[in-house]
Each structure stands twice: as structure tokens, then as C-alpha cells.
Image (cartoon, rainbow, N blue to C red):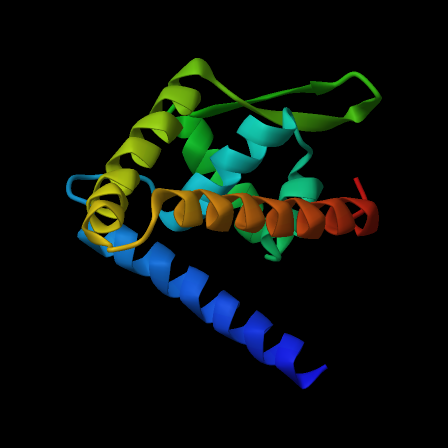
Length: 150
């Protein structure tokens, strides 16, 4: 069990450092990490209630409400009535928000692409590593979606 916990901790630290390093190495203005995560959640999951976004980000509802308001002010998201509940609203990604998210991903992947190119690793190993990380993320997301209330 200890070996798995140690590997899990190393993986968390490595992924966090990877994100920080890629963000620091990227040039030009871009989204904050939190803004990018919220837009990414909307891109992957479609329109969401603020309470759902709050749960996904692990923040307080007033914090998410403020973030969504700022994203709405810049035209990256919009609020629409929730057809399932007239009292609630859904937050959805706009076309401008999707474009900004894609531009941000391009900006961040540049330094990572260069770093991967410079590695003496086999491209097949990198592909297997990427697939494994995708599987781990999917497993975590699947478990999270069953625990988080709408």
C-alpha cells in the first residue's frame, strides 16, 4: 500500500509542477489557471449550474459566482435558464470562450512540445504515458461525478 501512496504523491507533485512550469514558460497573456479550468469543465461537460462548478473547483459558491460574473463580462460564458428548474441558471461556454480556451491551450502546449521534443524518450513511451494519464484522469472524474450533487 505504501508504494501506491508514494507513487500517487509523486504523480500529483509531478503533474502540478508540469502545469506550473508550462504556464510559467508560456508567453503572452492568457487565462488564469482557474478560469481555464472552469472553461474546460464547460467545454467537456456542457452547461453547468454554478453549484456544480463550485463542487468541481472545490471553492466557495460566492467565489465561483464572482468568477462566472467576470467571465460573463468578458463574453466567455453566458447564463441561461435551466429548463429543469425555473429558479436556476446554467452557465455555458460561448463561441468566444471556446476560442479563448483553445488559444490558451495552444499557448501552454508550445513550451511542453519543445520539452518533449528535447527528451531522449521513445515517442511510443510518451504515447503510453499520455494514455495512462488520460485513464487515471477519467477514473478520477468518473468517481467525482457520482459523488458531486448537481
